[in-house]
Image 1: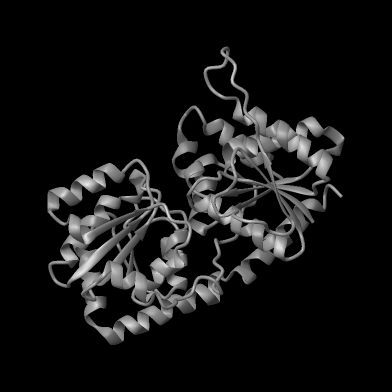
Image 2: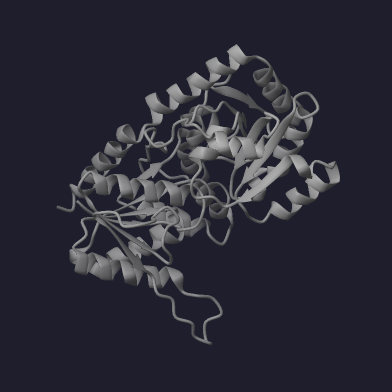
Length: 375
């Protein structure tokens, strides 16, 4: 197949999933064309069968805001016509599905089917804004196919927008051949010179990730067990998180690494993954951590209960229950045998349920199904 993929190229689960999917499809012999305003963060280096088409934006004094939706639709038409695409796969309902529908209409009889993957923010937050609600509903209903990364997100979409269209659940995935525990002795020695336990959190530091809660959990854990906290990522809540560390007087034990493209060594050097999110449609970073044999301590929101098993691969608590999450963490770190059992279970669940080679064929089948009425 000749596949066009559009996603947000910046850090975040949707862009990572879209990029990893495109790379996996290319390895399976498909041609994959990424169409976006910038090169996706994980699309580094030459990859056979992968192409990138940049959406060019023009600035005119008349327009206060860039017309990205229109520019993207125009670029989609161009790539479809001259690269002979078979299908478009867009990640996020707005504006990507809106642009894909517009491109489909412009192409007319020679139009192209498109499928939309919902990742969460476009449905649970942005899409519920009154100014976007009807556009989100329209874009989903006009998609030839729709997938969601969790059952929770599917149910939210159907109920929030009164949609009757079928939505197929295809969960996020991980390459367990790449994401697996490795020797990370040098990194661990740097972070933990006295063999302190290492807690890690990875996110885009948005409010819904509740990164300050991660710091508060760590502050309770360190009272019981010598430990350090590694924070990976950047975003609007970083300054507040840094200030909290100063207020608590724990800056020497909290390491802000900023954005990182390679995480295996960081996960391999860590002991526990913390995810106290307020909203999480799936939890891709938690899955990648689990593949590296890290037990996960998380909130009980969204798709997280579908990802991990409470009392087996980690523990789940209510949003904001810092004391309980801290107790769960201490409980695991104090019992070496229990920790080993949880660590092995986390890796096993990632391999058995979310392996890339199992999930990617589901997308191939999905593409074939929605292409049938057009061909």
